[in-house]
Length: 130
Image (cartoon, rainbow, N blue to C red):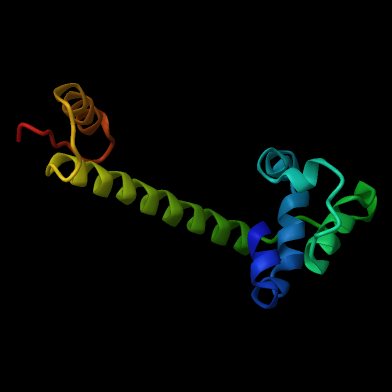
């Protein structure tokens, strides 16, 4: 979402208040600061209007902040996170498939490492020897 604020402001503007609410809920802001440097430090002068708006809202005293996001927003974020995780798992499987079918030049040690990864990967049980 942070990148969307900069690169697609029209699409992001519809969700900026929900994003602020999500960041203000519980420890979400602390977690976001781990991956968004602009939330940790004074932002550079090149921030967009939407990013500046988010930063100003997050600097307000806690008693002036909005209520936490609704359950539907949290559920949607959870669903999106699950979809992202599934997509990333598929990417790993695709990468392993490319390596297994010799489209990558693997040494025997690397082939054993891929085989080990496949045996230990959740949800699918395949190996190079099968």
